[in-house]
Image (cartoon, rainbow, N blue to C red; front, side):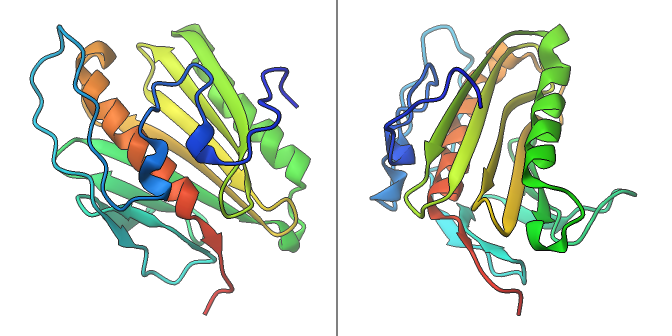
Length: 206
């Protein structure tokens, strides 16, 4: 695994490792306050962060932003339980792809390798890629990646129980606005992703 592995971290709420994810208290509170934006950012009015349960029939469950919509992945290569969490007002799109490890089509090692390769494709434009491996409060193992620079995806992750389920996610923005200007929005959505990981549970498909 990565040399940047953060040993001894038992909960995602303790995740730091260079990330500006200082609002991980979402796991113990249903309300959080957004960190005041740094001086120099354009004024962006962001709604209060509230969450709702994922109600679709999937082998995973989590809470996601009340300001987002869930849409099935309609791409040509989409597989069952691939979804998009779309923020209409922010232009953000969290793309989730799911793999059933029990199906035996791909091994966990192969899926992790593929996830790292997809993140690595952004190295040309990224001037930094930071990674941390953690255990979530629900007992899953997760790796999160923060990418800095003018990259199309600023935050990526995968989470697994190592035996049955594998879920990968990537944050994208449908806008040409530079990431420096989007910084408050990126941080806002990252907090929502962390809440999603903190509340993620696997379940048998109905």
